[in-house]
Length: 166
Image 1 (cartoon, rainbow, N blue to C red):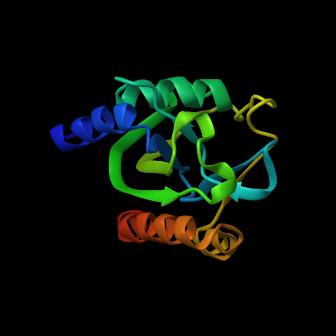
Image 2 (cartoon, one colour; image 1 turned 90 degrees about the vertical axis):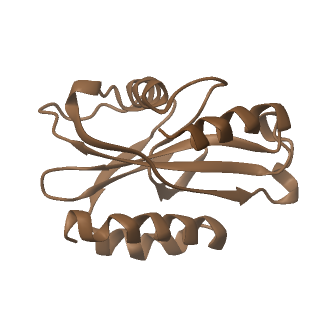
């Protein structure tokens, strides 16, 4: 985590414009990527993600959110690259003011290798489905997201494409 990123998070909370959210791009030994569906949006596949609390670091957020949503232990992760990509997405008018933030979400993308021996066990209040997908399948699924968010996710995937040899 860089000083600039710490400052960015510190600025986001008092401004109450963009909610800081960490997106977790998890890959397995087969280089498949984990997507989940939430009860709030049961038709949309997305990377696991979690809102960051004020003064919470990327590692603290990763540990808390992945334990809460997937019952995943930190020791099952390796090769973690925190906040390798970031960007904001504006809410539509219907969602403005959601959770006290007026404009939208500010996403920080984190990449990590999952090597756990146990099957992931989603918290059904948070995640109602999970599945490992190939890079090609994920590119196809991006069409279900709003354009602004789809473009941001695609940019993050472009950054990791050569690293993971898709």
